[in-house]
Image (cartoon, rainbow, N blue to C red; front, side, top):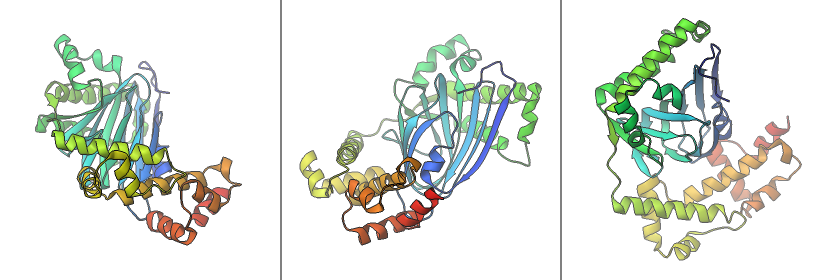
Length: 326
């Protein structure tokens, strides 16, 4: 649960992760699911600081990831990319390094990030933000945090100043987290962060809406993914999706490539393989056989399944299961 606005306590968490599920579980107070999309061993890092109704965190991932989830209750969230290798899609909107994502608690978000993704973000208790804003700023707040997760653009200099302010907190040469035990440090840091944040929010506008064609392609991707994930026991094919969505194979491939920079076969297979991995890492299901878990996710050719699993995660299914049982 989030710390109260009057607390002088703090928490500091620094974790290196080797699995997308482990990474998803590392952010305090959030309920998230991460699916690894690009092949290779996963490496990530989460640094998370909380005090005075603020959560400030930085997370990095070396593989393309599809994530979704919700934040802790009663907060506004702002995320600012630091670096990325390719395009990023936030709730069907393109997110660039010169933009930021915003949403508030109760809104489920989705983020498909490319390889080598680095982002700094903050979640702030609503009351803490409102108390620092002018009446005019409070009136404009619904435009910055609308009724759905969105991408915002702001004055570039102000956005850089906020990004650099947050990054400085995670630089050991600049700041020692144990200093947060002093209330004076908490007040000073909170004031600096909220000061930069309010300036950015007051100079922000919604990013241009995606073209109708791009929005339509994102909708096709969402419908295809939803259909495949509700039929995990069936080996869903591209032909099945084309028939279900009443589109051509070429158009389906174009939608996935344009929206996610990945072909539909690879994307849907990755989601199913992540489902298998999640089941293999579940301690409560340790008595299940690999072949049975694979079959439940539509994999019937076991040697091919093992090869595809190893290509995506850098290890065999038996390696994952062995680590779970240790």
